[in-house]
Length: 132
Image (cartoon, rainbow, N blue to C red):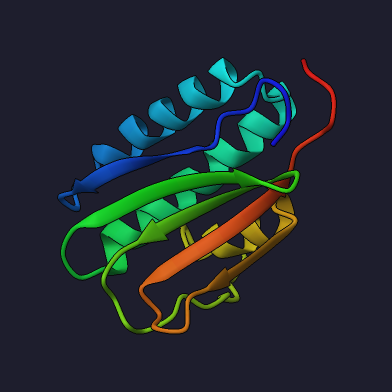
């Protein structure tokens, strides 16, 4: 673990309500800034959290969970939504108002994927060795 970086955090499962997206962004940003993660990384992680939590709320079954884990120079974000159908990259048309969330996550993150049971979508970000 890097100096200044915490081991991780878990948010208790919450009801799938669209108002929770902003709350999860705020919790994530506050925690990462407290850990002194570089601001560009904070912004990318918060955007990914926003997209994954939104997907969990829109497509999940039951409560949604958010977890972040720091290990080996990576910050891994996991969103669990109870839906056994794995999240998939979609091709959105130019006129579509949605459908680009996982594409954004794939572009911003070092890596992303879905658990074998389909319930958890995750992404990982490299953490710089320096501080802000």
